[in-house]
Structure formats: structure tokens, C-alpha cells
Amino acid sequence: MIADDDGLVRPVSIRDSVAVSGPNWWIEGGPAWLSFDRMSGLAPSEINATADPTGLPPGTHTGSFIVKSDVGDQLVVEAILRVLP
Image (cartoon, rainbow, N blue to C red; front, side, top):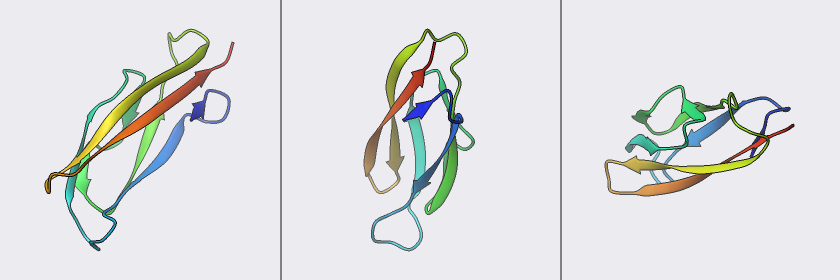
């Protein structure tokens, strides 16, 4: 969860649970208020997810994005942003 009073950038680690290197990965989807400094790469990777609360009303906003790989795996990741009044 990212709250607008505790920084808007979070690191995201992308890695295979078995292989030391690989696979290739990419991100699909995601809420409009969430962006990434890279949308694809070769695992293991560390990327930054940035939440932008501009224009959002106070409250909890949720969405999800999918991390897919060239070996057919995919992971749905929930994103939560809490905007304070």
C-alpha cells in the first residue's frame, strides 16, 4: 500500500523462484495513477513503481497490474493507494 503522506515510490523486485537469471518479463495493465520506470526486462530486476494521486479524491484506490514472462508465467499484483484529505 502507498499512502500519499509516506512517499509515492516503491521498489518492486521481479525474479524467478528457481532460475538465477531470466526469464524475460513485461508489465501489462495497471491503474492510471500508477507508473513504472521500466515496463520490461530480464529477471532478476528491481524497478520503481510511482503512484500519482493528482486529481484523485480522498479515499482508498485499488487496481492491479500483471507481470508476464516469456516462459508463460504471469502474476497479478494488487496496487493500493490511499489518498488523504
